[in-house]
Every structure is written in C-alpha cells, then in structure tokens.
Length: 82
Image 1 (cartoon, rainbow, N blue to C red):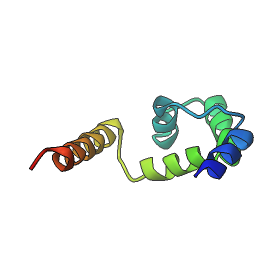
Image 2 (cartoon, one colour; image 1 turned 60 degrees about the vertical axis):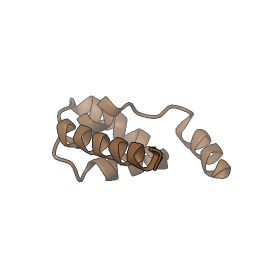
Image 3 (spheres, one colour; image 1 turned 120 degrees about the horizontal axis):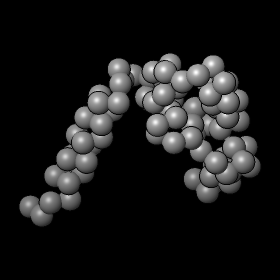
Image 4 (tube, rainbow, N blue to C red; image 1 turned 30 degrees about the vertical axis):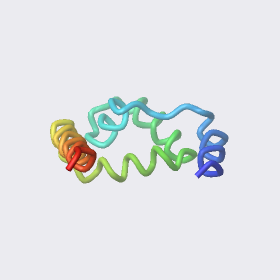
C-alpha cells in the first residue's frame, strides 16, 4: 500500500481531484477546458481514474450520497456492540 501511495504522489504531483470535480466530470457538466484539465490529470493519476470508474455507475450526486450513507450505516452496524 505504501508503494502505491508514493507512486501516486509522484505521478499525480500530489494533487487529487475533489468530489465536485469528479462528479462534474462523470456527469459531463463542466466546460471543455475543465474537462481537458481533468482528463490530463486522469492520465497520470491512478487513484482518480479509479474514482471516476466507481462514480460512473451512479446517475448523479444524490445516488452517490445515498450509496455513501448506506456504506456508513453498514459500518456503524458492524461496529455496534452485540
């Protein structure tokens, strides 16, 4: 895991995209200039590429937020004392 992170930092110059940028890219609601900038970043950042791949399965931000809420609830249920 450490090797992947150090490789990522070198390749992506230590700056990842925000959730807003990622969802805007996936939903195609950014300007042509913004899309090109993100595509350039994705060429050298495997973590952001993975994030885009994961987000591509969701129709929009609300679907993504619903999924995050479900994951949080599952984690809390597993951590709850039995």
